[in-house]
Length: 297
Image (cartoon, rainbow, N blue to C red; front, side, top):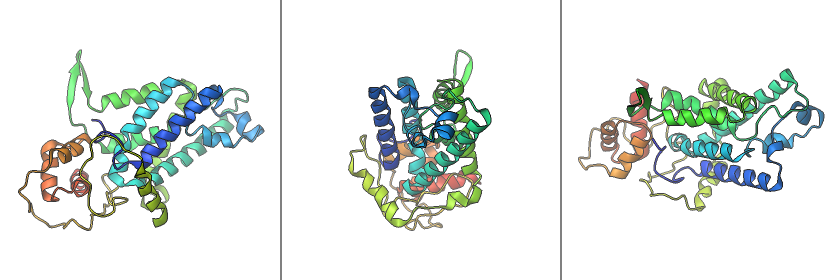
């Protein structure tokens, strides 16, 4: 599984987040401040350096953390493609705010005045993304290495474990807070999963695509992409307007290989992906709807 076609096609918010995280980490390293970006009780409650809450949410404190972190952020762009840039931005905002709240509360409870208790970096977004990754991304292949069973999801978990333990207690705490934030989002507390940004903000997301996204383009659906693909499996889903619900397999044309590969890379079975594309007349978003609805039954 690689999270979809290469590059940031249909994932402008993820691309912006990855670029911001990388640039801030490099800038902090050049300034020699990377190791001091973490959060401590003294920074927040004594010195009132509230700006650290924002900087520490983006910039990693070391190169290994940056490599594993950006790799996971890049992989999890699959969720932006599934639910749309608008709702994915809500997911980012709610996850980061909730996780930051947990981190601040933890600083109060633990009260280590001089040490940096919370490692810097977008741990909240990365580890909150592991919640839908665990529940909603199916295993497509299984294999054995030296007698141990693995799946195509195992390498993502191993990368997450490496990042979680990269700074031991300092990275363990924000990772746990991120998982809790992802769980709250999945439970739809305060109906957060129904929230959307206003239309003028949604149009701003679409303008983020002026940068080259790289990779080979996949099939672009007609109409507005943002917010059309449903949220994670098992909940009420919004069917695209250009897709008739009761339509039979109206097209006998074999779907493009790129479209099939896109769905397979999301974790769906190849035959089911082909049938969904035929049923949706080669609309990748509508086919994703069909596959997610099938899994939720």
